[in-house]
Length: 368
Ligand SMILES: *Cc1c(COP(=O)(O)O)cnc(C)c1O
Image (cartoon, rainbow, N blue to C red):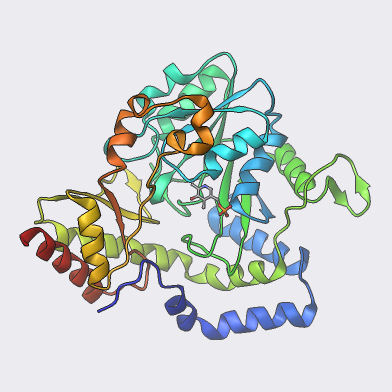
């Protein structure tokens, strides 16, 4: 049996008529950049997600960068983020001219350890990019409280947490703004690069929309210099075609995680992902920690099972940040986990048979 890490083809086959029609419509109307399909997606996503403004842009890295710039973050400022994430969470801080400051991860939930946040705050701290990693929200309640008390902007990186919840509130709705990626493999994925900003703040929404479109809201009226970060019509139409299914797909991920827990439960060499109380984990990634990880990964590959690492090297230890002089002692939890983490195949279309096969193969490995 073959179990790919993600299977985008299967999802396409399930909704092929709607996707094909969506693409055909955009071509017929030659609405390639911005235009009615982008506007329609913005409105549909805003309504479904429960937010006032959705600002579509080219990708989920730009949405973070646009927020940095429009919140006035720049030279001399520090922005705090988490030691283990995708590099967008920190490179956009540098791109805005500020300095990234990393905080270690929570030992059970893998996102920023809220108990370490206060000591990372300095008079120069302007914002926090809080990443809700793998589909599980960080302890946003504690973090928001601290941000409020210290007058720091809270930006939520929701690239991996579409429709995740903590205490009934969805990712991206607590801070000043949320940033989403619609990269094809994300829980809601386009057929190319796409992203968006969500916010309930009217002023910030207008600024971001302007900045993403060369600094203009009205053609040829450039109020500021901006960037070219627009969503294209094909991506918007694909996303609109997928939107009616996203809540069901999210529930299927959760059901698949429960099946993994059922089949992997007895294998003492692996640690399953923990779910924070009162939260909804949407499993963008199903990550275990496992003894003899590299050997296990190779064994699974030999048996047709594709796995991945999120991430093989934590951000502060990447070559890109060597000038900051961090060592693994600065991030004892994230650095130690690097060598044991393993992400198993996870997508809505995964079957119980496939999940059982993954678990059997892992069990067989440890009995060798
Ligand atoms: C995917 C991702 C991004 C960036 O999204 P792109 O659309 O690929 O630019 C940002 N942050 C996190 C945590 C991500 O996983």
